[in-house]
Each structure stands twice: as structure tokens, then as C-alpha cells.
Image (cartoon, rainbow, N blue to C red; front, side, top):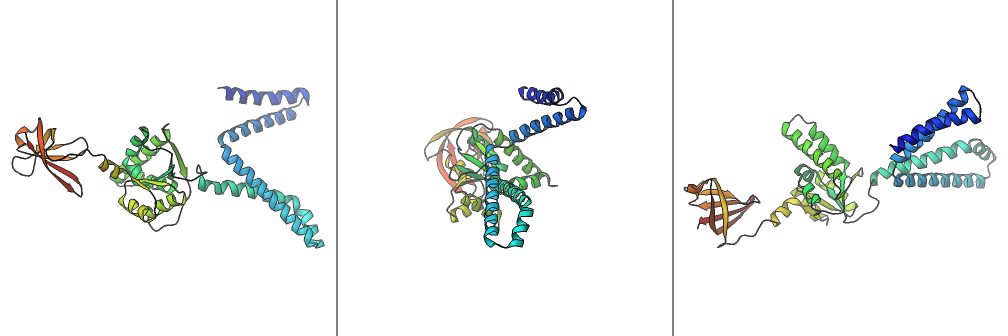
Length: 315
């Protein structure tokens, strides 16, 4: 509200002051209104620009001016009268062009490192699989992930393409990934930066890993190919699937547990239940207890490619 009071007061005060103290005609009043509009537009522009952008633009302005000074020195030292006369004629235009070129070029190139003014393992590059999965939000909410999450533009572009797909499943995955991006940006527990920086690679997994390596960052993923590529490039990969596996409770043969028998198994009289982490428990003679919670004793554990299976008997 105070900012709108300032804007309205500026647009009102400038025409009033010019009309009162300069000249009492409509042209002077319009000139004052134009000056007030310029002040308000400048305030809006600088409010939207971050300090780092303004500093980069000033640096580009300085480099453009230094380039003009060097060119002027070269023309004077060349001591060619026609060139010197031409330079004097167009020196002002060349100076303005170089200054504008320095500002535009510096601001344009700064987009490659938007929000990434420094490097290190506090940066974590998030790939497509982690965004589509969504559990990264929970890890950030409990402060398990710290530092700065880096979202490459080519990943968000791929999410937009998935969300616009004609395939319902692909469209749902893309929409979920975009929702996860929005939720991450709203979190107060962690900082999220989107970067336009790109690297050349033959595959998407290699592209993610090379980007992380150029930033000396880590990779957050659920993709086995990304994890394998990161291992080859000596980049740390934080695989959420591996974390889930590592946090599964340790169960040893002979231990007892309480399990809810949900359905019957493949073999005769078997019952099937699940632990909180999704591990399947096969209960011998558990078919008669479907729909009940029973005490069982573990007698065997089988590790498969899809996870663990626990075999138990009724106590």
C-alpha cells in the first residue's frame, strides 16, 4: 500500500510543481506528468531487478567504456588523418554503441549462471526422475537436504513437454513434476535456483552429470543411469531410491514382529502382509488369519532385484 501512495503522489506532484513554478500551460503540465511517469517506471524496473543484475550491468558498462578508450588510443597512435577525422565524427555514436553492447552482453551471458554465483557441494542439481517422483519435497521439509537446489531449464522444459503430451500417463507425470517444482519454490527450508546453463552431451543422464561437474555440485536423482554416469565422472549422486533401501529396518531370522495379513499367497495356506516400508512378508499358515494382525517369527530373508522378501511362521 505505501508504494502505491508514493506512485500516486509522484504522478500528482510533478505536474503540479511544473505548473506552479515553471509555466502555467498544458505543455509544461504534460512534461511534468511525463517526468513523474519516468520516475515511477524507474522505481518499478529497479524493484524487479536483483542487485546482482545491476552490478553485472555496471560491469558491462565499464568494460564497454574501457574498450572505447583503447580504440581511441589506437586511432590516435595510428596518426592517420583521415581515420582520425572519421573517428572524431563518429566517436560519440561508437561510444554509445560500445556501452550498450557491454551492458547487453554482460546481462545476457549472466543468465547462464543465474543464481549460481559460486560453486561447491552446497549446490544440488535435480534431475527429471527426482521431480516426477516427488519425495524430494519431503526430504527438504525435514531439512534432510540442505544447500541450494539447482533446476536446469532443459529439465523444466521437458516437464512442460510431458505435461502437454497426448498420453494420459505421460501428461500426469509431467503435471506432477511441475507441481513438485512449484512446491519446492514455496519451501522456506531450502533455496531453489533455475539455471539456463547448458552443456553438450549425447544423453540426458550425461548432460545432468556434466552440468553438476561444471558446478562442482551433487546430483539428486532416482535414475540408475544418472547414478552410473555420475560414478564414471566422479560426481556425487544422491539417489533417493538407494536412501529408501538403506533406511529399511534390519530384520534378522528368529526375530518376532506383528504383521497384518492382507491376502493369500501363491502357495497353499500362505498369507501375505507388508511392513511400513512396503517390504512383503510371506506368512506360513497365515491364510486363515487374513484380515487380522498376528505375531510371527522370521525364519528366512530373501533379497531380490525388486527388494526384500521376508518369510515368517505363525507363533
